[in-house]
Length: 286
Ligand code: ATR
Image (cartoon, rainbow, N blue to C red; front, side, top):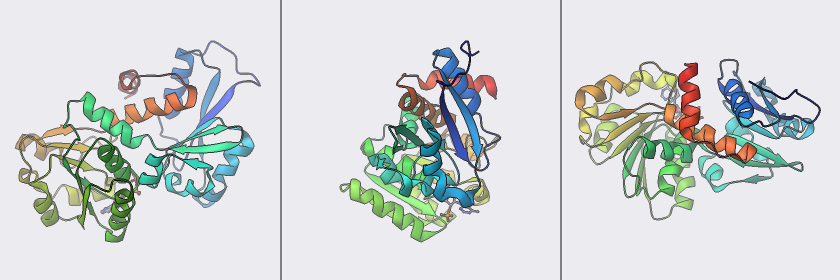
């Protein structure tokens, strides 16, 4: 628990999204601030999506020191920031903003968080692998960027909207020129064709796509392949049971959640924190 009183000097951080009321972030960051005796508070701001253009100015005007962004602002904040990391450009999305002397810097910690969790859970080493990514939104692009940064050689995007997957592949190709990309439909046949040469499948589609994803035949994968579902809130992710039956290793999204949060906390405060410390908090809260 917080020992210091909140004063005029207390730094204000927050989560900007819609919806945000269910979020564990305020409890998590405030616990960490207390643990490290940092004079800061973290709040949740439920912002009307119609106000997206004004979010960056709100951060500046209110003097927020750092902000996490969630749906639907991760993409829509890009134009209002003063600087972007390579990972956020490649992802086309920002999940962390820090403010220093009125200047806003955008980061994306999802991709690095993803590869750190894969490493921690003894998943496949990204170097030289073919990864099949289901989805082509901000999260899919961030995961692809993290894998490519660690040497993945081929990425196949399977997405409902082809144009979005093409855009993702083109944006990433500009940074990772030696890698191969292909784009397919989010359909059982396309999954079957792509899966046989893949060492890793990552489901980055959101909940409503579960029916399609559960129709995929995971037996098309090699036995040594792994499947990750980044939808950490799902009690029964679509391919989990089929992977178990087929002997394919399955990872839930909690590791990625913990590691991207640890990276964000360090960007906010300069205090290194391990994914394990965040994970312990999440385990206690669930
Ligand atoms: P995030 O920030 O989590 O990546 P997003 O950008 O909204 O969220 O991306 C959601 C992903 O889930 C997209 O790949 C989306 O496909 P489209 O690009 O075609 O929209 C996918 N998705 C969401 N609902 C879907 C559905 N009912 N069927 C198939 N794919 C779906």
